[in-house]
Amino acid sequence: MTLLIRPVAETPHLPTIAAWLHAQWWAAGGYSLEATEAFLRRATGPAAPCALVAEQDGIPLGTATFDTDDLPSRPDLAPWLASVLVTPEARRQGVATALVRAVEGLAAAQGVRRLWLFTPDQAPFYAARGWVRSGEEQYRGSPVVLMHRDLG
Ligand SMILES: CC(C)(COP(=O)(O)OP(=O)(O)OC[C@H]1O[C@@H](n2cnc3c(N)ncnc32)[C@H](O)[C@@H]1OP(=O)(O)O)[C@@H](O)C(=O)NCCC(=O)NCCS
Image 1 (spheres, rainbow, N blue to C red):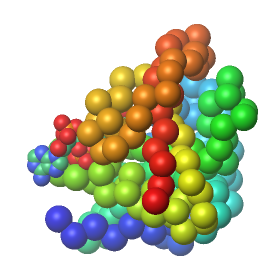
Image 2 (tube, rainbow, N blue to C red):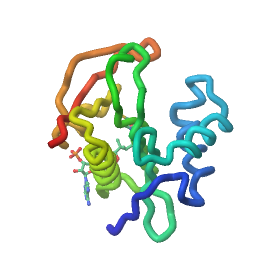
Image 3 (tube, helix red, strand yellow):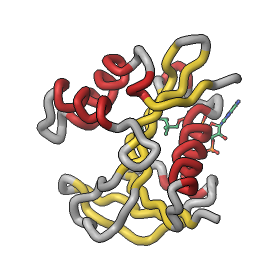
């Protein structure tokens, strides 16, 4: 699969990605679709925040964000790999893996030594890609696994 990965703000896919993220996470956080779109418009990188889209033949398949903050209980940690999402029909083809690597590359290019993420249920996916469990936290009243990855 040949993927093109670039900042969402540089593509015509911004409304689509905003709708995905809003439905998946942002609405539950009390944010409007307009606020989600506004975030994507300013998440241009190369420094965080930078929201990426992976596309094939002009079709958006997934997204991931290099972000300045993500887990309210750990404001001491930054920056973050956040909002990794692949459309159901494009899963298990390496799209998320490519997006994770792209965010790691963005962070490394910014001189980041340690990148963070949290996940309710995808820790094995990240562990298989070199991420290390750092402990448990709470997010919106539910347990999540905190993980980090040291960049070379
Ligand atoms: C979790 C999620 C992002 C994974 O996306 P994905 O694009 O399917 O991920 P990948 O294809 O890179 O890897 C998934 C699995 O497919 C396998 N895979 C990758 N390419 C493959 C291929 N060509 N053929 C068969 N399997 C393949 C990978 O080995 C991996 O399995 P593993 O975890 O046992 O190693 C996706 O399921 C999703 O969006 N879920 C909902 C949102 C979510 O939970 N996001 C994470 C929040 S922390």
